[in-house]
Image 1 (tube, rainbow, N blue to C red):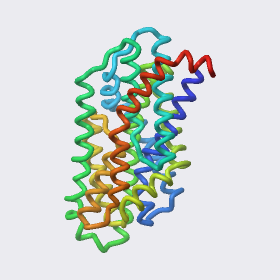
Image 2 (cartoon, rainbow, N blue to C red):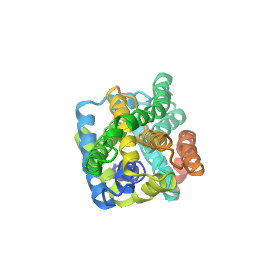
Image 3 (tube, rainbow, N blue to C red):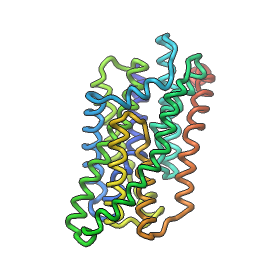
Length: 315
């Protein structure tokens, strides 16, 4: 059980390093905040988001819990948990090394389904249709950055107002990341009986994500806010506003989406709307990471399950 708790913490930590860092991209790239205080503020906000939604409004938790029906055997469930978390950790580590902001929460859902397929469980097709819908809505939600360009144009020269709004959007994005991804990790802990206390799972997950954001977010900020496009304050405000609006609606309705996907879509739309340069190679590499997360995580988990006894004996 201690091993599972360590794996759970490591996976949440990597999520904070590769996924939660998106929330600080605008503020850091536009020069409103320095990386360390921005990450600290984001860590506090995502902790609050995970706690509030996991405890009081667990709609996303319920959606994830219905994805796969696992065997009732307690040992099997613990093995499912171990393989799922190992899969997430391996994929997240590879993505972080490449500087790619992938979705560990989508990796978690795919790995959970892979384990269910290998262990004799079942996969709920309706729930996966909701996840697929979430992928589409991630891009559509990012398009909300376009009306934001018009809405905020009168304030385009008010640097002080933009800076305050940018910080507010950072907090909103981080809060909603905690609400989305925090619920997904907590749902795994509850499904696989890592702990009997939902509050304990929320606390561990929030602390690990916060630490990950503080330690490893710089690579993702550079990739999205500088290499993909030149992010200025105005563009960042519009992208953050669009992504925060989309995530708010999707989270309330319990649609599991990736904050990475929504944030990147919003930044792309905002940059395109302002006629800014967009590095297509970087954009395609990020999109490729989206597309490969599901099949790689599913089959990696499936084959790790099959070879689990060999792995344990070697260890």
